[in-house]
Length: 294
Image 1 (cartoon, rainbow, N blue to C red):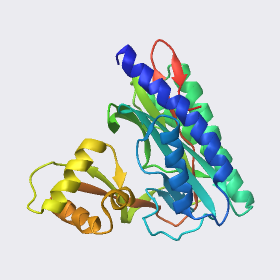
Image 2: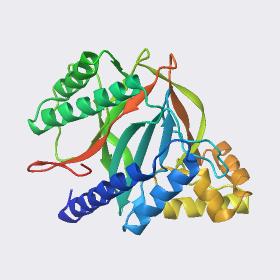
Image 3: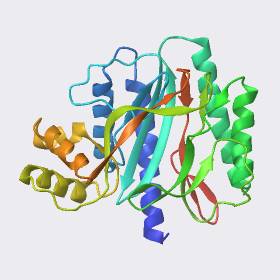
Image 4: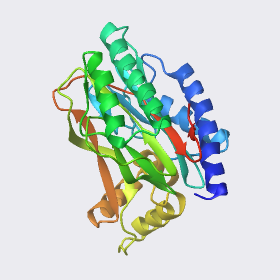
């Protein structure tokens, strides 16, 4: 990473800290998820950033990839994961907190387990431990709280306009001796009272550009050109496209997906319908380790 790229990543992290603090003040039981997402994304822009992906507001057994649609009426409830992203010129801060909205002792313990796992993993990273040791620490921390890590969700490396690139950081014990090199990473332990695996559920309305090949429809082409210019390879959602082009753009998104221009992410759901808590921060590995979003 060049000095300018590092500066962009650090600036994204500074905005993330303020957005996280703000989000904690507006997330309350029975507030529409649509209202929460819109306010968080507006705050990111007000502070000088752009959303790196649509705000994910996933309840209970939905581990990830729930963002409200343009007409969503779902209310905040249960064990809610608030997963947010900021970018400055494509350099990302990816961060999540979980909140208990039903005064549940078990929810609070799940949140504590994921937060402890994140804290302990970051300590291992600062000590320059291997990826295997980081995964082992996450697993042991969560299991010491009598819960299970989700084995098929991982932390990840990030690059310019790439939310997931290069290395993955497992949340479980493994034998990978590799150590983190200079770069930008997100670590995100998931703790569950379920079996510890996720499956792919229904479509989420979250997309990413897969191929800018030609498509016959002029309306779809206009939407595709906007996506390529505005989001590049970062995720976006149908809600954002409807805001720009109106409801007719939902058909354009369908055409683009069928034509192979777009990939739509599925919701990720715990296989036994166990509740899931998530904690996440972004860190920059340079001469020293900097947790940018903490």
